[in-house]
Image 1 (cartoon, rainbow, N blue to C red):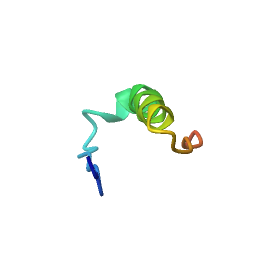
Image 2: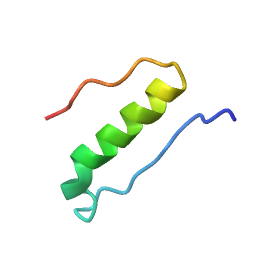
Image 3: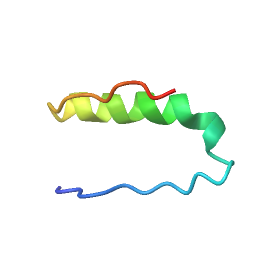
Image 4: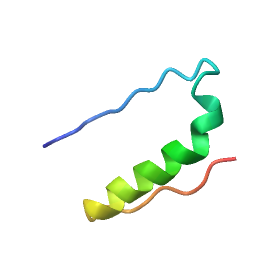
Length: 41
């Protein structure tokens, strides 16, 4: 699988889930052997 982009519509409905999205993205990157992302405040 070759994913080139993931897009989220952060109109306020997902913003409260920012930490959950970041954790999930980092777990996925780790499983793929890719570097993880730094936390964004």
